[in-house]
Length: 324
Image (cartoon, rainbow, N blue to C red; front, side, top):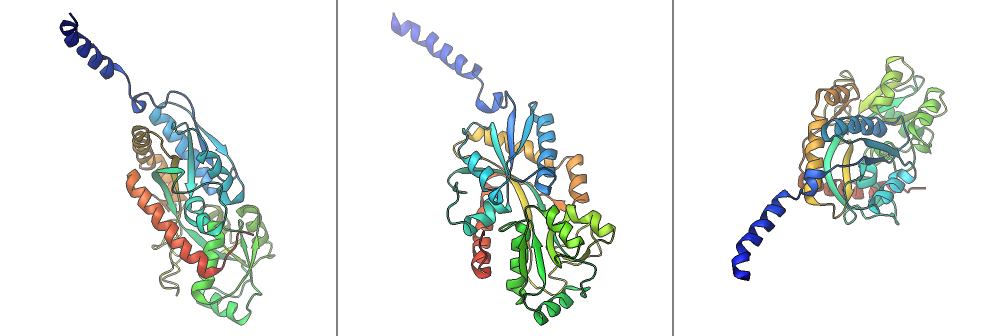
């Protein structure tokens, strides 16, 4: 009798399997937590909130931004690394968490390669070299000459040790043979306040936060760190154009999930991110904020992250930078 029942049982099993939704078909079925490793108001936070809004519209569930600032992004990254690998806790990783920090910190609370699955690139922007209006240098070459005539006397502000702002400055010094005195702050806004007040002389800053200050003449831009000039600052040369050949820093961010997240969930997130960053809303904001993006598969983004870790390992070693 059993052999007579087998065809029916097999058919029922196949129908049941076909009817059972895959993780990607049901994902997300509840709100998703998007962890941003910096305080509200900064560039990463702005992009994180824009992305969260677009992902909610695309995937039909809220993406709730959770700002976990501290230790150059290590606190946020560590928290996501230890979260369940189900796609409901995701990280807006940055050049800091997955590019600079692996070489800068000797005891990270996470492994950028083992603990994470890269999903997609979100944004790629530039920093801008700005000086106080009273600094007697109107070009990069003049700043280099001034710094060499006063080694260690010019004060360089940053948003904190190990930040992309700090490391942009370290790379500049290593490349040009100059020496500034680094003054780290808890965030770019505090550093910009002291730059406007003349308590520090220069800093490399994320373009979005400096744009309104540049427009008001409160700081003077000398160059941008990107490979090409920015639509938001068309008259400001790149550092390569301004006399520092080969200099290029991209202040990027991307989406990461804990390792072992189901591949179909990763692919669904990748598809949603790519749609989000190519939407009219985000493209407009990218242009306004001096940023851009590039569509990448999870595999392509993983290669990009690996290349960034190798690149910044060399820069950290040459600069001698330390987190504290």
